Image (cartoon, rainbow, N blue to C red; front, top):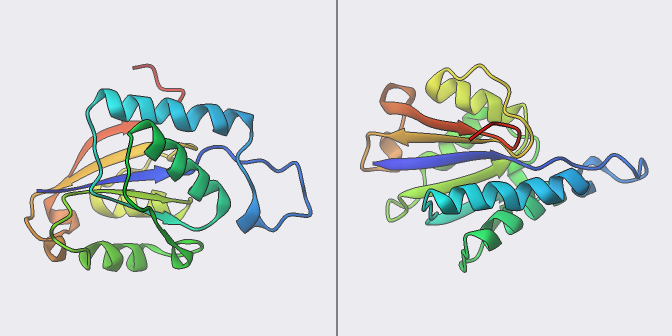
Amino acid sequence: MKKIYIIRHAKSSWKDMDLEDFDRPLNKRGELNAPLMGKRLKKKSVVPDIILSSSALRAKTTAKMIAKELQYSQKIVFKDDMYHTNVIFLHKMLKHLDDKHTTVFLFGHNSELNMLAEYYVDLEENIPTCGIVEIEFSSKKWSGISSKNATLLSFDYPKKEN
């Protein structure tokens, strides 16, 4: 079984309008929500084998904050091509992962992450900032993942009552 956690970056700041979109930091709510969601994952004993993240500042910061809560000590893989991407690219990227990885965290942006969740499990709800969609595939190999063997396990976000 392979499992992905699709994680939208935490709430970002629009305070400095001179910044490029790529360089926008988290705002105060985002800085609170990322550790909160990390704590929720830790409570569920979730441990990623690999973390992949867009290299945009808000996604990187969210990934680092959640990784810290989980005491994830491996290197986070930051990818420029996960910023302004598409479902086809993300799906191909996942299909080419090393099969030694079972659980993958994927930090990125909307609308791409919404479309990925919809592609795999028909999730039509918007993934709010710092939202996490947990999907399991009944496949032993990443090359075998598809919407046909995907199951939505959970959908959590900061304002959701747990």
